[in-house]
Image 1 (cartoon, rainbow, N blue to C red):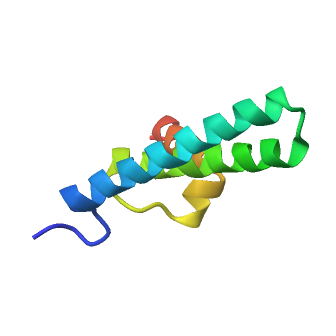
Image 2 (tube, helix red, strand yellow):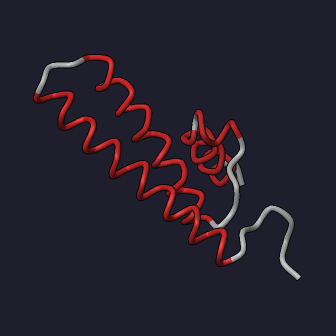
Length: 87
């Protein structure tokens, strides 16, 4: 039996596929936004890049992320470093 919150191999593959679709689409959109000097598609492409990176992190960690990890992923890293120094 697997731990609650962890992903099955199928779900992990699905997360990887979602990340590739979001990252590929956003890179293509960003390319055309820069070529045609369009601001709105450029900002949306950057948001899609972040969303695709979040799905990539889900696939790599094999678990769903909390909102805090999505919005500010560096907080967990900094908290882990400070707790190691305090030991």
